[in-house]
Length: 330
Image (cartoon, rainbow, N blue to C red; front, side, top):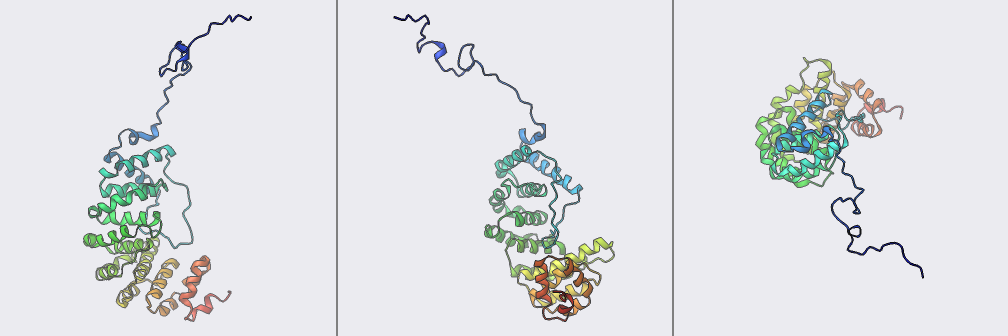
């Protein structure tokens, strides 16, 4: 017979019990608590995420982006070049995760203007953590709080970031709110509103008709030829975008397009002429004479354009004598 020299310990012994606290002989005796250094990059957003702190954080991000010169009311969505550069805001992934979670949790206490400002910050820094879809319903419930600037900036961001044809009611509500802030709008504001609505696949011919009288009075401000050449090209691009924006909404009043033709400069950029010609053609307005005066600009723009824009130029020039001159090589 073999005699056991070891002492058997029953289930009542301390070493056989699971304890929730660290003891000198328990199963958790090897656990050691360690304090980790707080990542200061989170700043006050992590600890004090009230509405004011979230707003101030968004303002800080927008200021950083503004200093880099990348803020623009009208995006160059039809341009052949794309801005694929890295974000200019040097923040960690943890910062954006915390910022987006705090923003989503704080949506009920944020005003419509603060909500727009924060999603602008995410868009400017090229961050997408689901904040745009989350902001739609709260914004829809607070649309009446939007002023002119918040409305246009909100349209700018959400028309790019939301999936097409998924938020038709939201953009319809935005369009219905435009008359409430129309008194604040200048010519460029009207162009931006129509443009971003069309980018969101929402068209409203009655809204374009409503804007026409005031736009025709203020359109001269889009073509200030007393500015520097670079600024002048920006402004004639706004005129071209205006023609295309109104046409996209199904507005074809000849008086509007004749007004744009009157103030459109002879010395213009190719992109501006392209948008202007496309808008005139879409509205059924004669554009052959205008293109004849800008034949060299047309040729230069077609030469540097991609296949999509070249195909649009073909449709515009198909019934003009410039077609054979521009597309001789093809």
